[in-house]
Structures are given as C-alpha cells and as structure tokens.
Amino acid sequence: MAKADNERVNFAWQYGAQARKDGKERVVPQVWAEFADAWLKGFDGGNVAAAAGKPKPVSDTLEAELDEPGVSDPSQP
Image (cartoon, rainbow, N blue to C red; front, side, top):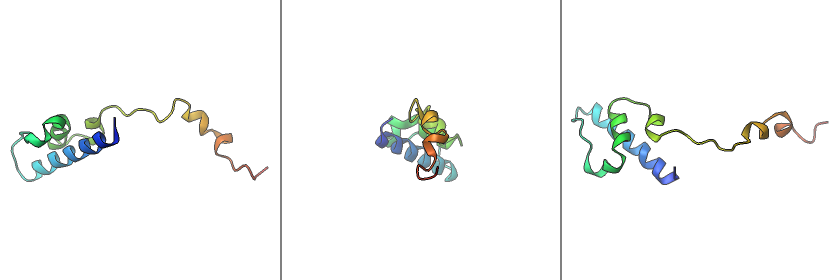
C-alpha cells in the first residue's frame, strides 16, 4: 500500500472513531467513500491495522539480515 493511501486509511479510521464518540450515525460521509471500510472499522471500534489490510514484510531475508553477525559491532573481535 502506498504511503499516501496508508495515511488516508489511518485518517478515515480516526474520523470514524471520532464520529462514534460524537454520537453520529453509522453512515460513511461521502468524503470517505473510497476508504469506507477503514471509516467503519474506526466507528465500530476495530483495529486500525485491520483496516489497513495485511502488512507486507519489509524484506524476505529480514531474519537473516538481523541475525547475530548482521547486528554485531564489526570493531569488536
């Protein structure tokens, strides 16, 4: 997911959560129609991570990159 879309999902979720707190109806405003799922998750008290979808791994080899040799200080013997 592109960074801009991820930010919009987060904002939609926040606005949905705020609408619930303000006692508004569970109706997605037109401005959030594209991100209606995230708005509804926020309104229903759902997790913002669930609204954004499944996160993608940073790297397929992240575990290998962060093993002991990958994070040890090269100046130490």
